[in-house]
Amino acid sequence: MDEVSTYCKIPTITAQDLQLATDVIDAYKDRSFGPTNFTDMSKLRKRSGMGWGQCLSGRVLHNPIIAVTDITTQVPSPFGGLQTVHYPIESIQFDDDNSLYYTFYPMLSSTPQPFTPPIPKAIRVSYSSGYEVIPEQIKYCCGVIADSINKNGGFNNYKARTDFDMSITFSNEGILTNDIKSLIDGPFLI
Image (tube, rainbow, N blue to C red; front, top):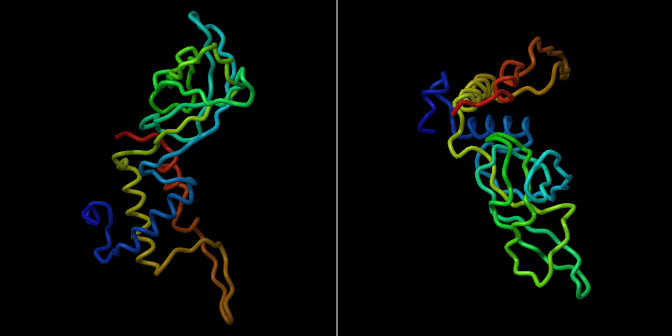
């Protein structure tokens, strides 16, 4: 609410308008832009062209990555059943800051083993993803959507509607216009 005057043009914007605008953006992206914790089961495949040791590659589902908190897998135990193997956070190297893809070095297992565990086919990666500081573009989009919600008394998610004795047809895309969508989908400069 302390940034309303910066991003909204209508002075009567309420916290409810802002929350609804945030919900519209989150629903469009199917996630929140704020920091959120995830745990993904990530399949691994051999990575070619790597020199030292066994290198695998994998993918997580959400970016940008703030921090990886845990890496584990289940492997067959020589004594029967399955056992959990823990890997240090350093065993994953992301390709770049906004990449979903990573290189995994399984030889860095931090679980003491009386035997060498087999190379896993998948690992469970727990991590936090999102923006610790919400990008300006998203704040701007939220302000434009909140203005539209306040001005129209809600948001329209339909192109045409017929009520009792009148018919309404909208000539635009509603409050989530193509321009707003391209700003939400675009690269963010923080």
